[in-house]
Image (tube, rainbow, N blue to C red; front, side, top):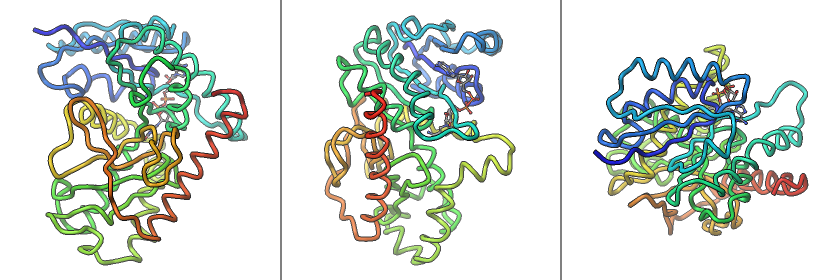
Length: 328
Ligand code: NAI
């Protein structure tokens, strides 16, 4: 068998970590024939809980799991790593201003970017899940100057999957009948789920649905505010669906998008679609051979333009804010 792929997961003792680690170890992240070695990073207070999860991982006797190492030191946790899933972050607590939130997360993602720069494997791929995901990814990327910028991505796949689910219900079709869904912008309430380029069984999705009021007043807000609706119903934030989306994101990045389809990933902008260069924004992307490319040449009408601009404007403001705080 081949040498194991090193996968580092931060926030491993958290709720997404608990839903994620078993799926990675079972082979769903990279493929059913790829052995993995898990490297878990936690803060010192949560190391014991991570050890408990590692005991359960042992007890699953996963044939593909080469072993589990636990760290409370980022430099060690990222040494030699091939895939880094940055899940641990500082949540917004009551009375916390945006600046405080960005500063607290800068304190996590700056040293993690530096540690990745110092010791990760040459083929390192990074997915940031911890919020504010796009800007946390930017902070880490800016502190890893020796790693190609395109290796830092943030997760909008959960939003993408939520959009597929809502559209499939509305149209009465299976999610697998829907292609070319797009999430643009920030993983926040300003995100823009776009069905104008999506297809249902090969036909334009917006024309097939033909219901602008549903699109504006139901679909877009439902997708954008789904996280809050889950908290309201479950009494806890989305964890299994977030973990599932993280699996999808990396699996698609490594194994490629299907012909005639694309996915949504937040990646470093090259200026495509008027998105300022350097910010980490969600785009329609195809992947092949472990590399992503932004889908080019889509026509953007005024309705979509306004929404993309609003979300991208928020990302540009977040970048200014972290610059102002000296975090990048
Ligand atoms: P959680 O609070 O259950 O777990 C977070 C874990 O991170 C904790 O165990 C904590 O000890 C750990 N942690 C904190 N600082 C750390 C550091 N410096 N290094 C390593 N570990 C550290 O949170 P949960 O539910 O697992 O969510 C994790 C993050 O994912 C949150 O920021 C959440 O907002 C975000 N999220 C993002 C989504 C997306 O679509 N991009 C969807 C859902 C959640």
